[in-house]
Image (cartoon, rainbow, N blue to C red):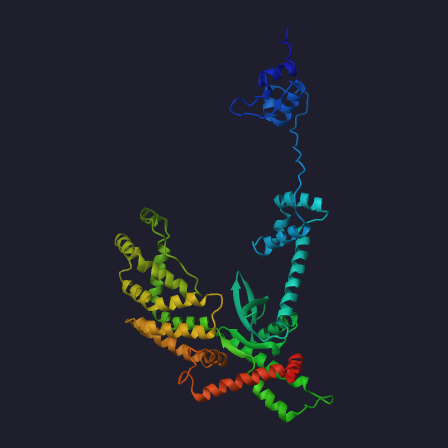
Length: 487
């Protein structure tokens, strides 16, 4: 005769613990303590608890009938009160894309949807990648309008530079101006270019970006760029464009020039109003490159050893000594070369021992180069780090540069002698620039009684140039002209 199957209410007593205080669940054993508790024993509630909370154990222990469809019940989340509003969620989605560099599609990932959908449902709105793109456009327009308001009626300097990465070519344009006695920098555009960056093409792109902010070339005091020929030619194109713009504004109804004699003098004076300022840091890098290219073979040899150190066969040596690998560098940054060579100089003892064991890592023929290189370029490298501060004025830059030349001249090795000559030569070319001269002239460290930084004729030339430029700015911008005539 078949044994009769036990009823659930009888089976429950095998998996509970009971005393005077109440009844507790122990289906998981002593090591898996469950907090489910009944003051008064109810077998049916214990069965439901086993099935819902301990599904796998309940199935194993026989708390389901043979023909019963067994599926674990999904646990419904409890509703909770959370203080959040729509703007906070919008702002967070935008910052994930713009600040944390998350891809736009991340907003639609299932994990993000699990978070955003309940929030959207409670707020009565949706947060998707499409909506986030709309938020981004709205935020971008607000930023553009704010920058446009800041630039109205101001003279500002433009900084233009181009870069390439992953097959994309980007032209960056910044505006720099004074506000509340502080230098402000605003990024006007990061423009992807798909054509050859000729001077005329760059001029067109710069004018397009300026038009977005409702400002023109008459507000531009100077343009700072690297020493690329196309960049310099682009500034000359901007100078011609502003001459044409001024001439067009002073034509009468018949297309004739108003007060031609006066205007021709104005245009002649205004032809250099958009001053080209060659990037001082880039110019210093050129001075360094003039020297480092003479030692390309030595730098290549040290670089090859730095790369060879990364082979798996040498890993144990570095780990045993707790020694970091020599840093590698980007080709466009000379500071990376210095840090690599400085690393070998700092840990010379370790690399001499390693080179004695493995000929591939032997620097015997280059140790003199390493020592001379670090000695010669240390002052210039330290100056370059200081130039990377948030804002370094041209007169401060000039002071740092001449101090770097002085310190380099005190070092007695061939590299230092060559470097000091090139630093002095490049500085002289920078000082031919009128804004650079004006910055030095306004600095009491260089302009004092009996100062010989500039000749009397040069001082007068600088004064006249900027008196004319300021006057023309006031004259051409009507609002300022009215203010100027009332003073």
